[in-house]
Each structure stands twice: as structure tokens, then as C-alpha cells.
Length: 161
Ligand code: THU
Image (cartoon, rainbow, N blue to C red; front, top):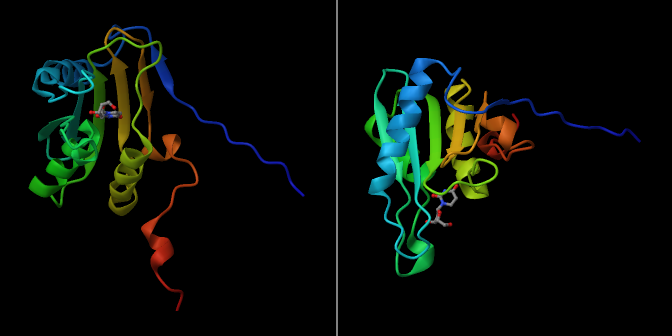
């Protein structure tokens, strides 16, 4: 029997001060995009912006529906749009912000984590994740794997030779 543990490292910033200007610009773009959220049922606006390897910026917001389960989170809207428009480009970063201020930055739901890690695994390059909720602190993770340890990987589906 072996006891094991897992340590997850990430960086917390009090505010955008001290962040590199590219990240500040991406965070501002993500915040501005909150106005495009369609969240009449929850009133919880979420915005996600993907920065692609070719420099393209692809934005998404949560899109709700009167038939609740038909709606989709901002992260999936953004990354599905990004990979539809630029299927061969790696996703370098995803920034997620919410309108409401919460004690800790709102982090992606389980389904979104699963979708994000699919692209991280297949592109063989980590996707950086930056989160801020209203005027909360900012959290910066180096990889989606850090927020989804022990992830299910499509590779498991491949039969061994
Ligand atoms: N939501 C997101 O867009 N991303 C998340 O990471 C968590 C939740 C949306 C879904 C729904 O429109 C609203 O926030 C409330 O759950």
C-alpha cells in the first residue's frame, strides 16, 4: 500500500498590476465580451476568450435556453468556435471572466474541463488558463491538466496492438 498525494501549482495575482501586458489585454477583451452573454435565466454572465497560436482571438459567452440543458457554457462556445475556425491552430491560452465578483475566480465546470483537455492532449501543448470573476483575484494555471487531474483521455479508447 502506498499513500500518494498531488500538488497543484498556480499563480495568484491581486489585480492586473504585475501581469504582462498581453495578458492584461486578453483579460480586458474577455471582460468587454461579457455584454454578449445570453443569460436571461441565471443572470450569471460568463465570457471566455481563446488566444490561438496564429494570434487569432476567438470569443465566446454563455448561451442559455428556455429548455435549460440546451444552453452552453462560455468556455465550450469559445473553444468549439476556435477549433471550428482554426482547426489546425493550437490553443495557447483561454481566459475566463464573469461579471459577478466572487471570492475565488469561477473555474470551468466538469464538462468544460473535459472538452478543454481534449484539445490540450491532442495538440500536445499545454493550454494556459487565466480566470477572474468581477474584481476578484486572478488565477493563472499553466495547463488544463492542473484543474483536471486523472482525466479521461481518448487515447484510452485505442486498443493495444
Ligand atoms: N457557466 C459558464 O458559462 N461557465 C462555467 O464555467 C460555469 C457556468 C454558465 C452556464 C449558465 O449559463 C450559467 O453560467 C449559470 O450556471
